[in-house]
Image (tube, rainbow, N blue to C red):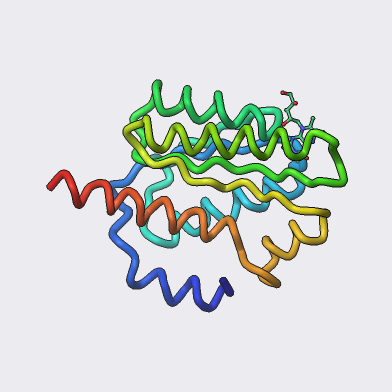
Length: 161
Ligand code: DLZ
C-alpha cells in the first residue's frame, strides 16, 4: 500500500481514540523491525490513537513473539496486539521452523484468546524483499499492521454493542 493510499484510508478508519494497543517487536533484524514499529506507531497516532494507549515491548527474536504476545494479552488491558518480526531465509536454516512455529501459535492465540493478534511477521527470501515491503516498493507493512489492528478492534467491539 502506498503512503498516499494509507493517508486516504485514514479518513475512513474507525475512531481509534479509545483503543488500546500492544506492540511486541523482535530485536532480531532490528534495522527492519524498528522501522516497522515506527510505521505502526505513526499510523496509530495518525488515526487518532493516544500515545498513552500504546504499549511497546521487545523480545529477542521472532520465536519469542509467541510468549511475548501471550503474556501481554494476559497482563495488560490492550484491545489488540501487533506482533512484529522479520525472518530472512538466507540467515537461517531454521527459517521454516521459526515461521511455522510463530504463524501457527499466533493463529492459535487468535482463536483461543479474547483479543486479535495481528500477524506482523515478514517472512522473506532475502533482505531486499523485506526492505521492499517496508519502503513503499511493495508496501509499508507497519502501517498496514496498524490499520488491521484498528479494524479488528472495531470488528470485535461491533459484536459486543
Ligand atoms: C536464531 C534465529 C535466526 C537464525 N534467524 C532469525 C531471523 O531471521 N529472524 C528472527 O526474528 N529471529 C531469528 N532467530 C532467532 C529466533 O527467533 C529465536 O530468538 C531463537 O531461536 C531463540 O529462541
